[in-house]
Length: 158
Image 1 (cartoon, rainbow, N blue to C red):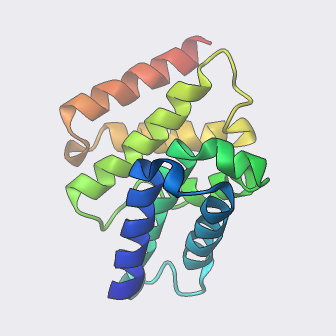
Image 2 (image 1 turned 180 degrees about the vertical axis):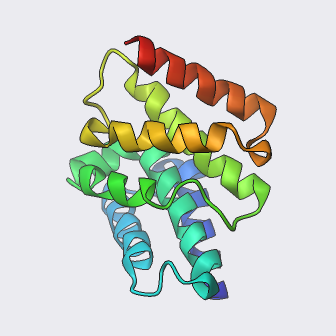
């Protein structure tokens, strides 16, 4: 579990900061491996929480920062509901939990209220539900909670 969690953290870091080092094919392969962790039969077991939540955070970073690569591979749409189903992170430390929510905010901000079909499509209600559930939690932090509230109000007004 520790090695898998460490590998997931590394994939997330490369997805966010790797620049051209991460090709489209490598992005799709990394996302598929992270999805396998999230879909494992024991993914929701308490003993596997560290591994699962590290994979969810890493997948969020790929969806946020490498969405075009995943879209080109045809994997963004099926990965999004899988990722959202693991949010908000419940067992991760505060920094990782906030990072996962920031990824969601970035995805929503990129989509914009005027384009509800991209990149979340039918998963938008699930995404907004995640924001709503997390916004009221103290661990979310005032700045992030304010950002999430602005997003919720923007989508509500649209």
